Image (cartoon, rainbow, N blue to C red; front, top):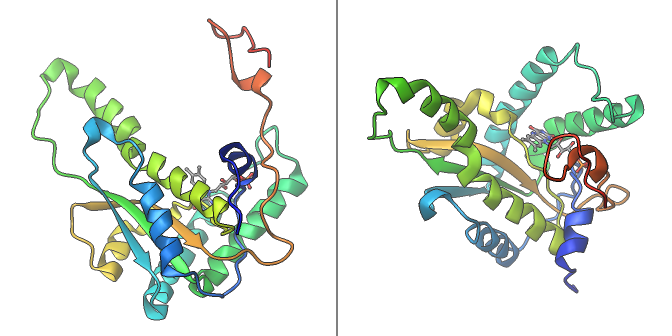
Length: 226
Ligand SMILES: Cc1cc2nc3c(=O)[nH]c(=O)nc-3n(C[C@H](O)[C@H](O)[C@H](O)COP(=O)(O)O)c2cc1C
């Protein structure tokens, strides 16, 4: 297939959650993984690892954990209202697609689990810095894997494959670790279901809040004029 330009990929890589069961060739998975490992990581540590799950029994195990996490999440979010920019109908559509994914994850041909090998930090900050270091670490923790994840999402888009960044399996990270035989220091940050999109549920324009609402020039409140 013809590849598309970077900006077209960015503008059309919307979250896809309905897939055909058709398999995905290993060479395409390799290209997706190769895109992942081109990403930046803190101090260029590259302490990432990716588990490609293709085996039907393994996919069923991961899907069972994901379904449990989805049940927990829907219970937690029961009272949650759509964000101000979201229409009630759009929010409902998203949640019903998310539910469809949770119920059909075992049928998706490829799942990629992305995570980091987290060694315990040898450095102990001075007492007066402990709090700031701990909160910065919590903020920064995913920063060495999510750029790789976004590269995979864009690579999928370029190859005509659908995907969506998912994270709720993390509620049961220990179970994922056990199901996949992951080492204790491996923390999973994302799970990407990958497959060919079902007809009628393919790529298309990504809709977002306008730049004028979210970008400023020089100081807060001075909207960026696009
Ligand atoms: C940090 C993060 C966590 C997410 N976790 C999940 C998830 O667990 N399950 C899911 O179906 N979608 C998940 N998503 C996908 C978002 O719902 C989706 O990217 C967003 O609704 C935008 O969708 P769109 O690109 O189709 O507009 C997650 C996205 C992000 C950035």
